[in-house]
Image (tube, rainbow, N blue to C red; front, side, top):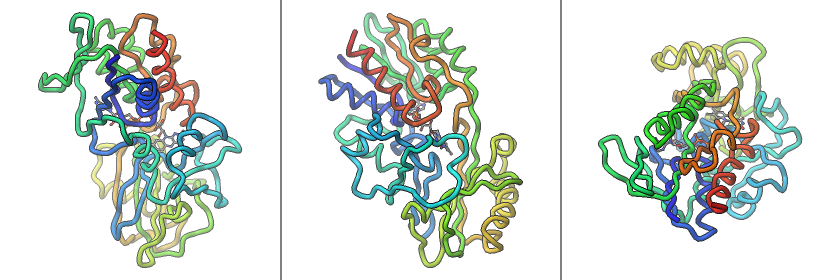
Length: 325
Ligand SMILES: Cc1cc2nc3c(=O)[nH]c(=O)nc-3n(C[C@H](O)[C@H](O)[C@H](O)COP(=O)(O)OP(=O)(O)OC[C@H]3O[C@@H](n4cnc5c(N)ncnc54)[C@H](O)[C@@H]3O)c2cc1C
């Protein structure tokens, strides 16, 4: 069976790994240059590693993700045990919070090892081609024909693809209605001694949380410690199209309230915008993918809950559906 998986985030990589392990031919197509989707890391000034998407991975012991971590990515694994509030609303009670010294992309990179992954390739359409499905780019360039396609993009982006797929329009309308919170992130290098805490939630002001990257062994460079501040959902929506200067004008005074005056004039800053950061509601994956559908939707829009474990399970569900067909 030939399968195209659209998106190299966790859901797509779980689906691809399961299918390849079962002997199928799989191509993962990813629009960005990197792997991991919203499990994202960058190098900031002085080569500091900063996770600007998912801050930590909370994995139930013995769960699906724990299996991938143990098999593939233990060498620079960090269990984040520093005191401080869990990242609001998302963390699993009692589950270890994992990160990697080399950044959160460590796990997706390990999962992608040995898979055929084509990066820098945005899929624009999925069309019927006789019994097969043709996957194509914006300019109409074909990316090949497949027996199955697994779409793992966030809801609205998945909907755009389903709109152009056989009998996908109704499912697209449901997906388009899945609500996401936006997230504008400020990455900042501040000349302070890293605090004891990992995550801090200011009680007032525009920030939803601040993470102290040193707690994940992203160590200070030349006395400059790295922090990531997430603006809350309403402020993020308001500032999504604003200039970096406007974002920093909102975030830095609030950062200084938590970290001290040095944070008002950081050694370096970067701004990252996520239009689709976290889902507030999700669809039922089986209902959205009726029997007979060969374009399957996985990813957080159809997860059973808000945890990364639930997101990963959607990739496994899609692989099973294909394997049992
Ligand atoms: C700032 C932030 C904080 C978060 N905090 C938490 C948290 O604390 N706990 C938690 O559980 N979750 C959190 N999340 C959400 C979590 O990261 C996501 O739910 C999860 O990573 C989604 O995985 P996925 O595989 O479904 O999608 P993604 O990781 O988004 O992967 C989908 C991939 O598809 C690619 N793609 C999209 N469209 C196309 C196309 N047309 N062609 C080719 N490729 C395409 C994208 O580039 C992306 O790489 C957070 C997210 C952000 C951004």
